[in-house]
View (cartoon, rainbow, N blue to C red):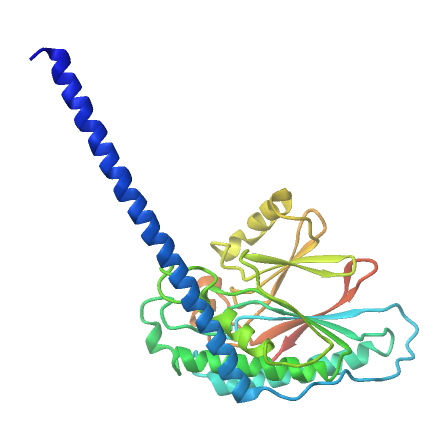
Length: 336
């Protein structure tokens, strides 16, 4: 046998091996596709079950828009509430689910009271609520977390969904138009990072359960997208809503924000985020601002360890001039 014959045999064996590997690859591809379809079907069933179970528990009758006469002479303004990092289910020396519920009721009262004051000078009929994520504490976010929670993940989901539903329902009785925007947080993820799709998130399920069961013609729901951010639009005002876990450290917020404003995403003026449990306002060189909203939690070990701050429980309320596209009034809502 000549050398050329040997090479021919080797080449023929290689072609056979390639053909065999291609066959295996096609089979694996079909299995993967089927698996994805099955997972999709499962998640669709989960969301349907979430909606139906919630509907039986707390669905109310149709909520009618309020009517009131506003004789203020100033230009129209819009209320903007940023709620984030409820960490519902977390237990510290001064925080647990019951305390969280009490603080959200305080938040609702303060939003309505401050809006009534603002109405003395401006018509404020419209409210935008930004749900910023980490509404639940979760159970598998970090080692040892099961020792820091007060209730199960299912109870966290049910409690947060009911609390959001009650909060939005109260706002619907005080505003003629309520818009809801949302982002999910890292504490809402299921399993370890990367083990499940990012959109399969308990925060997201709680939003769906809470908002999907509210019947009100003046509720405008902007469902969560698969993106890690939302662009909240109020007239000429454009703000970016993100949870904040996209930033590796508290000190890196400005650097990351400037990267976002460089054109990598659609234009916006201000940024709203949570995650760091400490209310902070940072002015960017382009005149836009970064609003970091606090948490309802207190005695947070995370805030002490990562941000070196003691977090007084708080959330955020702004009033927006939709024509000029800017914030006109800022309020940190202290909830302790």
